[in-house]
Image (cartoon, rainbow, N blue to C red):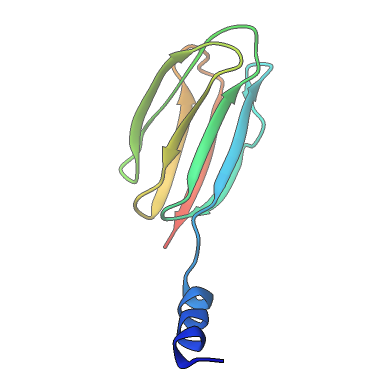
Length: 103
């Protein structure tokens, strides 16, 4: 085995790959009330309800507004710094979830 190949394996073993965490919006609720993710991970919100949702967060760790979107569509957010992200739906105020983002 070449030294280059051994070095490459060592680099790949120490590299952590970003993950995607799917969360559905179903029956006016998120399918997860909380998630634990890492910086660089993506959360994908899929609307499976027969009406629109508008997912947003005003949190310091990640502020976003995904806009209003209908059944069958998905929108994604990549977490770029650690902290707590409180997620809500502007159309359905009882829809809430928390995302803990670790380094």
